[in-house]
Length: 167
Image 1 (cartoon, rainbow, N blue to C red):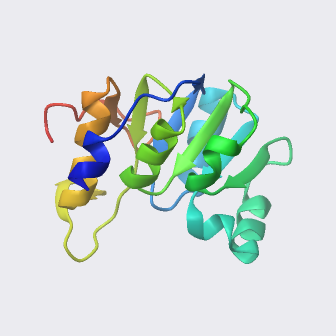
Image 2 (cartoon, one colour):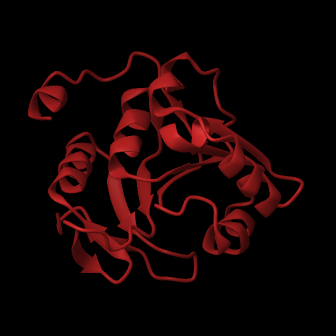
């Protein structure tokens, strides 16, 4: 992984979106009733390799969001070839690795919102509902090195907690 980060070059073309969130559940209640109304976005992009290839999961997520919200699914590796996303968009990824792929593809936001990353074998608790392993930390540290501010904030009602110095 170190070579991947050392060989990184800033994308020539970049685009900004309103909000990028890491949340291993992707579409769920906190996003639907919390973040969507708070941000007033009508475009949501789920960037995840497994979901992009799973029509059943896509259909379940499509049934979950309000009808006025456009929900699309992208493979992280395919972002470079994707057309420009609307600036008033929310991007959801399930891992810091997927967030890094978004950044590497030129998809930008000054702040990366970290939502739930739940307990799994090999992950250590940072906060309740935030568990990271060393790979997660490496990807997040490299985002910080590239000027991205990391904020843990499960819902808009929670106070944001900067993660930049905690990693």
